[in-house]
Image (cartoon, rainbow, N blue to C red; front, side, top):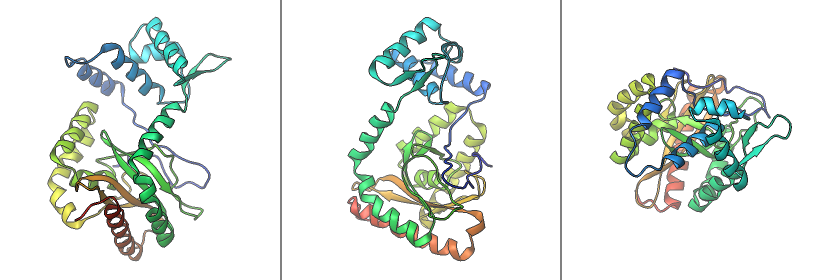
Length: 287
């Protein structure tokens, strides 16, 4: 299965991934959300729905947002004014459409920087890119996806180049599957719950299969994909562990299929696994 658009692009055109729900899936998700937990604050929950909706495209009319969220225009407008006051939303002068600002990105970037993993991993990312001549991505788990927090882009004209903040589906990416294989039971349960909530039957079926592959993946120590996440792109990924021995990130190399020869694959597996081990050791992992 292919879950993303073609990533065989010439620079500087970047492509980001996004999750889209069909109307039926969206309704199913809302039905699940309607089963409120005792601590849920309704207004906060709806505000977060608004932020997630705003992220789906560049700009929105108030009427569109009201319809998508199933909320009165007055309620959505008050939320938007609050976000405007705090700098999380901007409004066009002409048509008055609303968009997310970069403040959320700034907040997320500070959080990522505090983990220290990027500064530790980057020299090894650069070495891996130079050794293989291909794009290297560093990802961390985020719900049912892997979030790209750093990248070192191939110098070759034909290459993968995605935006920071893009998402790789856990069931349909090498990065996601190798993370899931090494994740503890609690983390696996959270991923499965998120995928059930999405009502994506194909993703759920792939996860059921993945559960039977976990031990083999752990024995292998890396995972590859077969054009599943991005059309025309193969990927090899290996897990990164923190000082507690928990998998905390994944490093991967993404290669256009035209350069993915058996010889390259063998070298890449060794290089990616070596980079993952080196980063893990710098983070304090002992095994």
